[in-house]
Length: 218
Image (cartoon, rainbow, N blue to C red; front, side, top):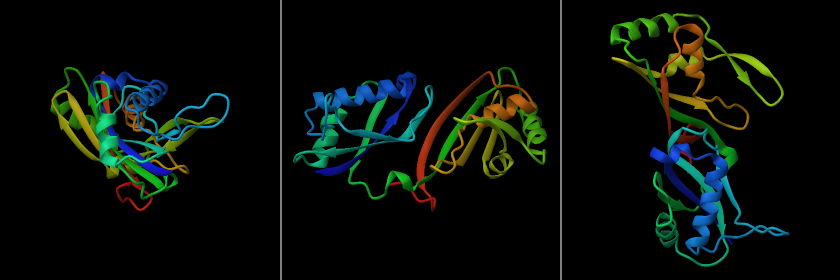
């Protein structure tokens, strides 16, 4: 039995696929591709696959990760070729490899967050960013399974690369994404809504996943 890691992109129309639908899509694709994936035991056996950090619906990504186990012999390049041929529009298999790190090693993820403000000039949005980032604290509400708490995300505004255009603000930022701490990039949307104006539309894309030492997750 051989552990494999599949990396893929999720973009375009595929951003409307929920995580549950993505799971079903991958199971069906593996079956149609006739890849010898190890199956769970019991009354309802199914391909054993695990996703790292499932995306929220409407998000795009350059680095989705799915782990599985081969229960038979098949070269990794053939696994990639067969699986890629079964993907729907918007899902692109970029790599199939042997995992070098454990999923528990994930510590951070980087994102591109684009906020659209219809009709706002670059000067208006420059002023908006200046006023917002001038606060000593930028607190938002974060919901967990047990409670809702206020957290200060000022440090992430300070570390982000923020670019302003006519009608839009783009934020490139790295956020904690491990099992101990996890921050959704929608926190920036919440901050603008609380402290200035809610964007008319937001587009969020995950760019990369890192381990706890901020090395690319392999």
